[in-house]
Length: 92
Image 1 (cartoon, one colour):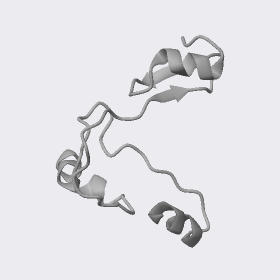
Image 2: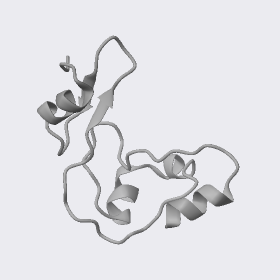
Image 3: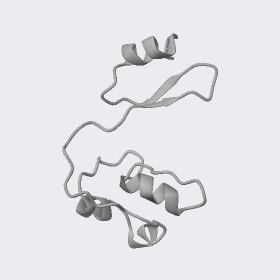
């Protein structure tokens, strides 16, 4: 509901990124996020939604579909085989 409300309030596209620097540990609380970023970097953040301490589950699977074939950029809870079945193609 909160992200739906934000979508109705803004008149521009927005995105949510990972809450950690590339290659950094997965944060599960606001404290872990602020620990990983410098103060100047956090000044560029427009909004952080605090849902409390999150369950420790693997981060999402990220698949690059911009090239000639799909490539898994970050492995997560969805197995390679499931992605290949859904896309009806082999992953590089």
